[in-house]
Image (tube, rainbow, N blue to C red; front, side):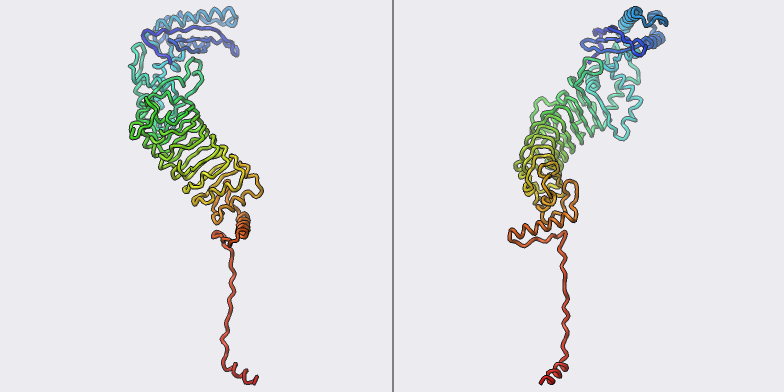
Length: 482
């Protein structure tokens, strides 16, 4: 990005004009070293600028080309005024180059592209609005160009050729950044506004932020983050989306010279981190760097390019794992690759079998919707999981089978009533059908059907009354018969 210095050449030229709704706009091209951008201004804006420069900085009043009311739209006049305004701009820029005033800097958009004036603009904003922005841990968004400016100022003093005021002092920026708890870094692969600056090509650091608990990086190149500082020690929730990451180490080890996980590498550990969302990237392998965040409880790896699960046994606290929208085709011995996961989302992959999930005994919620499962029998692999309560399997070919729900629920035997299938609890009618299917199956297998504890078969009882005989009456009746 642009940076003013004693030997830096500043050039401003008016390249063209444009008629818009009866008003002539002048397209100004500004160049500071290798950085250039364009600004569009009308003649009245030049008048406002000139009045401020005359009042505050002693610029000669007759320096600006005079106003013309009649014939000011004629091409010949517009072209002449373009040349006169360009001469005016070049004169005041050369005259004030060593101490560019705020009025001229903002007129030429220096606060959008040049380090010092951008920081002064941020300082004024945080001076007046900082307390409100920090209220209730509200998310605060910074762009790479702003973060580069902050990083540059931390390493370099304020140039002597730039005027400064109390409210535009850099201390307001540093103080505000140190209190931010919810930080959002939002990058872009496109040019920044009208300049030739591409934000995702800029290198910057985050060491000014001392209190971040929630870090969100969107559409930014994490490999260009040079140093995290205290962010590793304070962050509890991490989101990195649409950033073209190919490895989790790109963020967990960003700033490290060698992207290698070393046991006991405390400077790179994220000990407070419990929630990680790295969805919508290009991750094709789960690398060992995840061990640097051993307390992760929730991990979202959806919408990546994964084909296998690795390195997650180093996360003993992991309970929720989202692997949806990846490239999985089969699952082998998932119990050896995962710990005590409670929620597992494998939707929108290309799975054909559930066999590899049969020993995930802690699993409570399983989503395998939108895959390629054809056979009801595949559900049998997970039907004996003791904690499974929610199963989502809709969107598979198997879901088109007649009486699909009852056939799936039948496989859970006595636990059929406890299963929430495709976000719906089984109805009593479905449970009755399941009981019949279980009885038929038991009959075919030559065994007694197992009565459902949840819906026991009603048992009717008959009470038999025993009447005690009268002995005297019995003897009398016997005598008569003789």
